[in-house]
Length: 399
Image (spheres, rainbow, N blue to C red):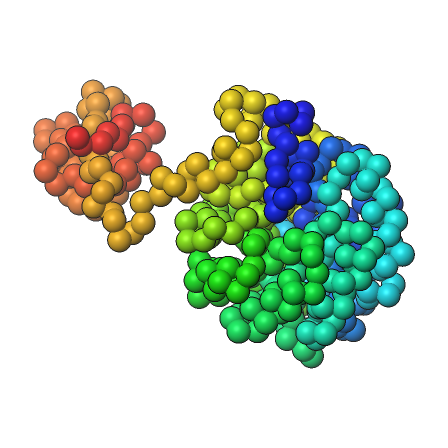
């Protein structure tokens, strides 16, 4: 497996690029070991914090729903597409967690898994102090959680509130980097004006690696009670997030030379591969790990090995392959024009002809009951192909 999936990130070797995100999986040594046995490349610990309001495990509330917002407890199993809505995000106090953290180190060594310590402090001195304590314990890497969407629960600026203030974000990251010798990864919220600009600023300040990205705040409404589910705004995740995350990973990859951990929306082996192609070096998987358990983690690693082997490329060779091919909006003229090619013989059996009313460029019309396509008016947008039930449309590039 290592010959196919082995990769390096910030000078540290991972047996594969699958990393269990910072979740309740990293809260205890017992659960950590269940996932360490699965063959994942790394596991991030539960975040330690100095914010007392966020140390109460009773504030944690989960709500999992299908894409049509049916509660998952009414379903036979976790669907392929789901919302993972969570509120509270209870973390742990450093003093309470240190014995667990030391035990986790021993487990990680036993299963050749890279343990990554997560910090989410409110006071600058504690960012530094916690980082030094983890380094002294023997942790090889740190992740600074500057994207936690529950940051408003604390008195001090915490999580996404730090990412949203560039100077404060740089101050925290730079202070930790100066304080330790191990690699530091900065996890950022997507709730900023421009992640490419923010990460460029962090890179100039000495940051070498970032996690793109944490979750958004969302709102889910209970249609029976007409109340907010689990009280109000909460972190929203799930596979539906992947296109948003991939875009931000690619933007950061193309704007900087930073090492990138992809996060938020990776659920399957194909998702992990897509994050690599967008520019990530490692890929965090959180929601599906929690919802589907260790057996799913092992399955994901096996499937990623098969997918990667089929490409005849290593994870490092795959990383950023698609990002390099992205045409930015300011260069749209470089994209080849397209047109629709329609086999009108297949249209005769279609009575509704939804393409007629969905063509917003007036390129389709009827003449004596026969569909007529006007090449000159056609934009090649593809709407007709999307609504055609007879597979009568193909889109081709205009050379």
